[in-house]
Length: 315
Image 1: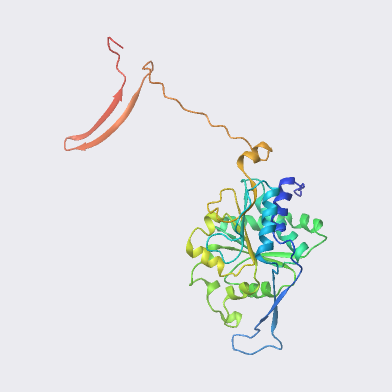
Image 2: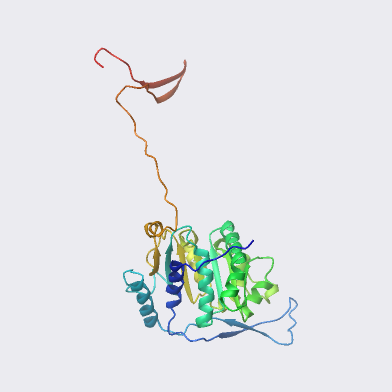
């Protein structure tokens, strides 16, 4: 049995909002050299060639694109392209829980490749559980997306400090390649990703990743880059741009380009309604009542103070 996917208008709008940011961009690769030597320092027949993204539209044009997306989505236009202390453009996409954020950003990746030729993407998540969820979503949607995108070749892998050759192949891939990692894997100098490694000819894994100038997808940013150290770690990836997906954005300094809030999600029957039964206390004294006020430990034992309703002549 296979899961059937429908084309949902709100998901399409979210994808188009992200893709619109790069309008005016032409397909252009950025190549770099990967040193191919073994741990003993013997150089192989030829050096490897790495392939990266290249964004060639200027900030002014990108801000116009962002404002266009915001106006179409009834969001107040931003005056600035960058958030607080940004060194690369990042954009908030607000989607209520249960409306398919992972599906949307996987489709966004394929659309960005189709329209602009971008190849390298890094998805940063806050936990191993969410990382596994992304992998599962990739597996169940792969056949669907291949049919939708004429058999496009793309791959997704989990960063594994014991399999650094996969980082090298990520850097040199000429097809869409997506790396998924937790923020904890590279937010400290002691992490394997940040240390020089003989398997990579003395290079640090993060340096090879940064050379590709990946487009970064941040899943639940309020839990990913909520510290200065985490923000610095993401900046060390040298992203071309970042897209931040959450239902509850904490940092609103980034331009919001799409919004599907809780009320809109409910009004469009995308999520179920939750009803909460209220509790009221009847203080009229017509029913039994006992309340513990406090407990004290004394030399003679334990003393408790309680509150009870007592029937008197007047009440």
